[in-house]
Image 1 (cartoon, rainbow, N blue to C red):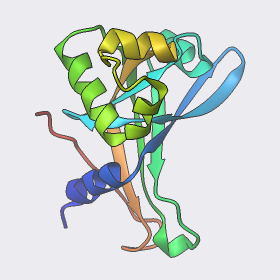
Image 2: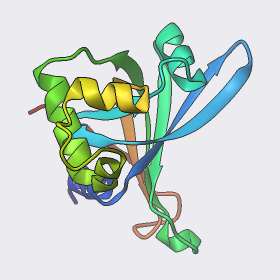
Image 3: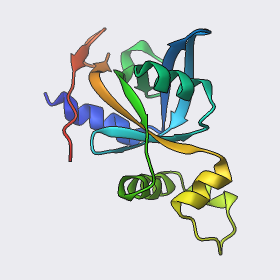
Image 4: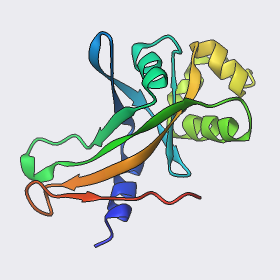
Length: 158
């Protein structure tokens, strides 16, 4: 069975990823909206938020994506670890922002219909920066296959 395909399908179906960090104040978890491009998760966050400060300082972050379910047999998800980095304005940032606006069209509601929504306008309006989480370790979980099923997956670039 191709577990990477199942993991990618889950990533496409879901909208939020929970980032987990740890620092001087202890462990912390924060949900973020994401888009998945070229083997990495792109998301916007406030640069002074705890999860960003701790992620950038430690250079290690874990993340999880799960589908909402009511029964244990339906649990499907991803457990990942990797690094978060700031994405500077440029081609990658523009691609990520365009994908983000397509996946989350409600974000346009915060602008006037005549506004040009470019990377700078988006960042200023929401007081956010763009970040990239690239997992270096990822496991796909799926209790519909077997209770406690977990298989390592690899995301291919490009």
